[in-house]
Amino acid sequence: MDKLRRVESLNRAVTQLQRARIRKQYGDISEDEMRMRIGALRLGRDLMIKAFGWDPDVQGW
Image (cartoon, rainbow, N blue to C red; front, side, top):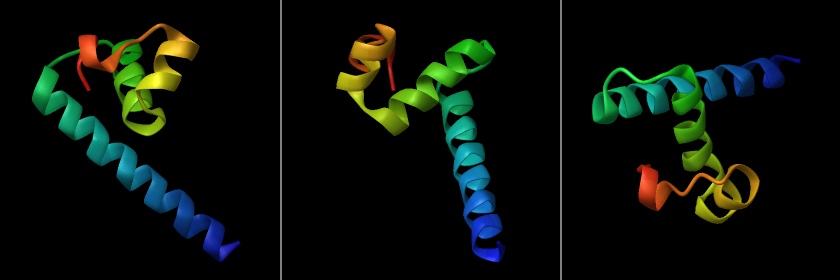
């Protein structure tokens, strides 16, 4: 369980860093857009287009 807690903590830290980077680049955006941009960072372009119709090359990473 201790390992799982550490992994969870690291995942939260990565998410916070991604959110900070996105806020710095795009300013005040909706939570939906934030989730899409985080998804693009994690899943990659092809899967984002296929699953959500979101093209990070067009919308921005």
